[in-house]
Image (cartoon, rainbow, N blue to C red; front, side, top):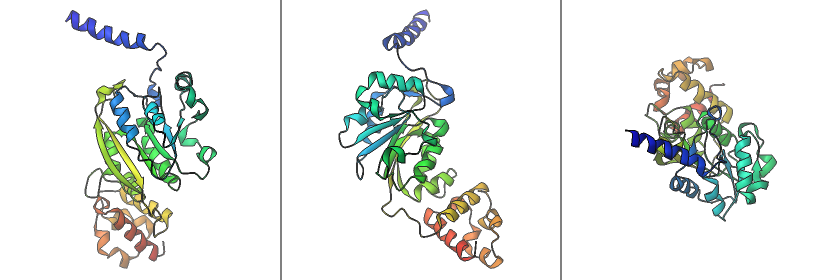
Length: 279
């Protein structure tokens, strides 16, 4: 037992001595630093490079994924990082990236300041505590984001990729799949992170649909989807009653379904029916 304990402590201390400038993971930022180079390479290679020549990596940390993005000469890589310690590390270790490090909070940052009207992809090993918000911001900027790939908590990745009929299918699934084709690529165990999270992670890729405009008012579509899933166990005629549906409209068979039973296309049809009702 003593030998095992010594070996564990030696390995732990050796890691610290190996890179004395390593960034300390901060819990409040949701940081779990990926240490497996092969996983980082696979995430980097998940980008197709079709339709853009710039990539924005969110939360690069110490650059384990960044190096593989920089290796790809089909696009120019930018990174956005809120952690000043990580920024200092990147500037010291990735000199050719220095001018493209955005010291910003991605959720608050106006991406047009960097990219203007240009197309750019998004990649990253995303902080779990803001990963859903990152997806919603990508959806908000979908006119400029043809592709999006990266790592999430597995539960969130599955939720984004899931189809109707599943218990995890919900708001995030419908709103993402309305504009992007989603592929779940692979699962990543906790052991390849420092510190290791308590759950598995999942890597997904989003490719924007050729026609990513909806044949219905988008604000109403978002409202219908969110309102329906706020009471996901109820039939739509009950969960959507705040929209003041007419009695005749509620007799339509679609309102006898629960939200998790509807595909994205059926949510579009549902929104069109509600719009024709005068909402």
